[in-house]
Amino acid sequence: MDYKDLADIIFPDAKPIEYYEEKYPERNLKEGAIVTRFAPSPTGFVHIGGLYQSLIAKKLAEQTEGVFFLRVEDTDQKREVENGVSGIVNALKDFEIQPDEGMISENEEKGKYGPYKQSLRKEIYQSYAKYLIEQGKAYPCFCTVEDGEEMRAKQETAKIRPGYYGVWAKCRNIPVIEAIEKIKAGEDYVIRFKSPGREDRKIKHHDVIKGNVDFPENDQDIVIIKADGLPTYHFAHVVDDHLMRTTHVIRGDEWLSSVPLHLQLFHELGFKAPKYAHIAPIMKNDNGNKRKLSKRKDAEAAVSYYDEEGIPAEAVKEYLLNIANSNFENWRRANKEKSIDEFELQLNKMSVSGALFDMIKLLDVGKTVISTFSAEKVYDESLKWANKYDKELAEMLEDKEYALKIFGIERGNKKPRKDISKWSEVKENIGYMYDDKFLNKKQDYPYQVINDKSDINKILDLYIEKYYNENDDKQTWFDKIKELAGEMGYAKEVKEYKANPDNYKAHVGDVSTVLRVALTSRTNTPDMYEIMQVLGKESIEKRFEKAKKAE
Ligand code: GLU
Image (cartoon, rainbow, N blue to C red; front, side, top):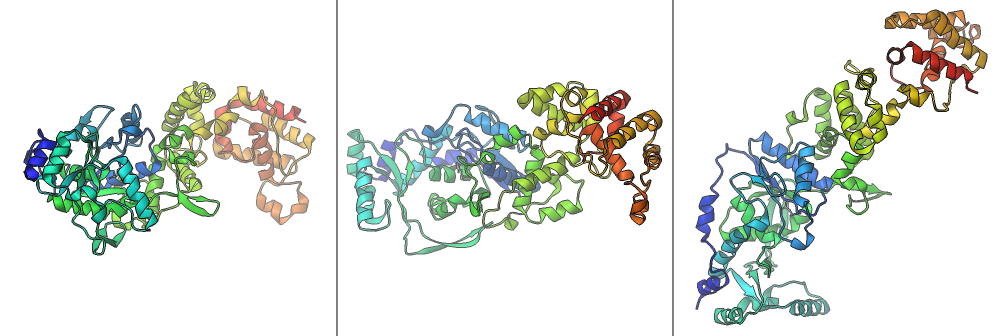
């Protein structure tokens, strides 16, 4: 009885690994092409950190004419939720980070290196586990949960390193014949890797992001196949990234400390190891403490948050690139019009420690991004958002022609308006342009400098009676406000007022403010000429009447 007999008893039907090696050949890509992946568990929650990793992975694949694929890691079936895969697929779709290969819906996939769902790869893992057993590099372990607890308690009391290694690896030396008897007798077991490592020896590793790191060798005989026949993360990672011909494993840095184990597994299986790039997590400043963005504590950790708030996907991606490469900001300044696809992302420029997530900055990016959208796109996107989250806004947008006029104010020119950072701000932002909302509600009139009620009313009356003409161009319109100011004893030019403040009650700017506040109840609005054009005479008159009557 030898290792081969043992392997045959455990996995009688497993195919030889050559079958898979042939089925999934080296990819035929150009030199330097990066093959990488996003490999989430379908837990129903997509973390912004996962989106960040995917964005980086997809960009690198694209830049190098490589491949970005989506592999679903569902070997921990306790953690699974219904439609967990669709949640991930849709999140990537919403952000236009679609994979070239892998899962494309709950149960469908594309690409030649699948299946891309680990639970469907059971036979593949078993073939490779069998291969290791045949060579005496893996073995069945019959320890029970109680055995494990007992071992841990002893290690704790003796204050020694925990784990299944060296003398603690009880089943490592069970003679083959005995192991076969136990299996035949129906005893439960898992398969463990027989680690050739020694903790007192070091390995040197170069991580693409973290740089050179030294680790002690792995000496733990980790479980590779669980009692349910499915692999552990470690084993599945090595088998899959080998067979899917991944060149770069881009993943969260919580896995950095597993690198010695993974390299050892690659080596013992006779595979070439991929490059590793461990991404630092996105951090949050919590009252002066820097901590990871947490699924439990922070709404913004969930990708769904951005959709609910109406922060455009373009803004989120642009912001994430800001975090990823510090030179992005300069590139953006120099290339205002370019798509982020043209930015050359570099893995080795990523920060080694976690970057802080700054919502204010993200919303600022949102403002800039939305300012580049056409009125039509602003309309479409706000409507899409409103249909999902805000009935009242959706109703306001029913009159498309009018809404387009509002969104068109100060848009499409050199310095477009930058007043919307997310779709959930639109209602507040345009509400005053709607007569039914504006006229039927009590309004405040913060007139600023000119506060004499009879003067204010006179300005409003005179403007409508004598000066307003909806066909005026902007220059004529403004010249008329100057005239009006002059007629009422205000300086026509701010300069004149500053030179002789005693000669005037105030200046043309203050008169403008009166008109603006009476029209909108705001001191700060986009261009007033355009607002008046959109409102039209009837609305302007009604608004002035309302202002005149206000206390
Ligand atoms: N399923 C693992 C996770 O969710 C994947 C890590 C990796 O990318 O290899 O963290």
